[in-house]
Length: 475
Image 1 (cartoon, rainbow, N blue to C red):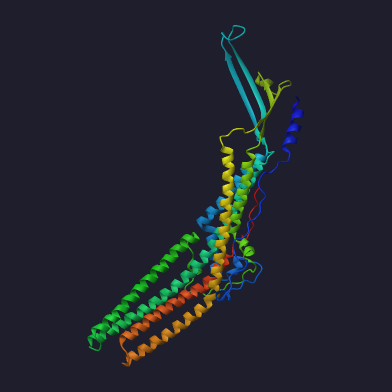
Image 2: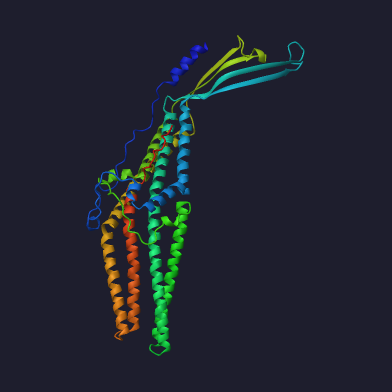
């Protein structure tokens, strides 16, 4: 058989179309309601735009945008997520390479001494053999789609990891925005705690002087001391909260954030753009974690094809073409050409149930992937519904808290005036002050929640998943 006849035969066999044995993929129905929740809690949270705006357009504060950019550039968890994507991309390339034969140039020299007792001439001799060839090692013809199925599985694992990176990006953007807002709120609380402490120190000094002068009793002095201690505790707690926010910011962003990019008080962040409309099953598919779960399901579906193909014959080819000679100088001269071609076929007959068990494992893996996909959609629906409920009620809560803070401040001022006129006790002043401090603290927290509400809704809808520069496609 001539090598010139073998090579076209091999090429024809390699180009033979393989049959995929993976089941037809049909996306499972979304196990959630066909419409978003309705009711008083959702009336102010309408979704009325076709697409989510990019995060740089959504967040209008230039300081916050710069901090988010720093996070995406320096956060170590996000860096690991990107490296995992690259790792899976190369793993897919490794798997895909099995579609092509592995060719390698090989050369060897063999030197053998034959002893006198084994030599035909009765004289010991030394022989030399040299060879150089191009070898193809164990190339499998994918007639039943085993390699194709494994390649599809690896490709979709890569896609799932890429969507996981996008999900990490969405989370990072929202965490950065919320931590930035929390720092501003805690700094406002620290300023208020400091003002309250200074006021209590002055009040206690006056009470102490009044006690020494006999104008008030020991009970009122202890009440004033109690309020001073409470203000000292609140001030220390506020200092700790700000310090911990700055520490958390350093870890999240991955580097020190310049002070000029940080908020000095609770921020009323303006968020540009509105949010998308549509049925939950349509809107939720924009979330990268949902896409990642579906890619994992598709990968599990492809793995079933590989498990099915294991029941069918595997055809492999091994070949080599080159030269061989007994003298190194004659290696590439005429008459030294050599070749070998070794096709083989193997059909599993008895595997001790391993092939059937592997097929059953692939089936269970797909069922697990379906359950994970459905749960991901249910969790996403809940998160969006919760965020919509917050957005629908937070404005009313903020207004009520502002009214409460205003009324308690007026009550505190009135109690002070009544006490100075002798019309009420000092205990009434202390009680009204506690109510005012609590209401003012609640107002700061409500203002932070108002700013964070749309941040959370934007995140739960998958906002911020798209990169400014598209990533290179898998090769």
